[in-house]
Structure formats: structure tokens, C-alpha cells
Image: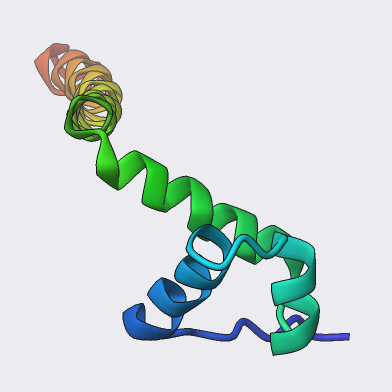
Length: 96
């Protein structure tokens, strides 16, 4: 069975979060009423909490930058290894 992913716009997500936070409803009841998964509702709530703390947002941004830099380092190390091997192949004199 293929998994289909639904996309919700920002207004919808904010409305769901407001239902839980402002009206005091549980995430499970809101999810059931709207036909979405509880996990999705709770993930949106966590994202809202993260947006309210700028220091936490900055940490997340820095972690993402660090991951990208580490991936680039690994890629460059592979490139250097390949170039070293190619240099060794072309630097050897032809055998007669």
C-alpha cells in the first residue's frame, strides 16, 4: 500500500494549535475531530513551542549548518582520495 502524504497550509496548522492551546482541548480530540493523526497535532505543537523560543531556533539552525558542513567535509575527503589515486596512476612511468 502506498503511503500518501497530506500537506496542510500554515493557517490550518495554526488553527489546530490554537484549538489545543486556547480552548484547552486535548490533541487527541482535535485530531479525531479533524481527521488527522495525533502525532501530527503534537508535532505542530512542538514546532510552535520551538518558534516561541528564539534561542532554541538558533541552536537548531546552527545544528543544521554543522550537519551540512560535515557532509561537505566527507564529500571533499572522498574527492581528495580519488584525486590521490588518479595522481598515483598517472605519475608512474609507462612499463615497457
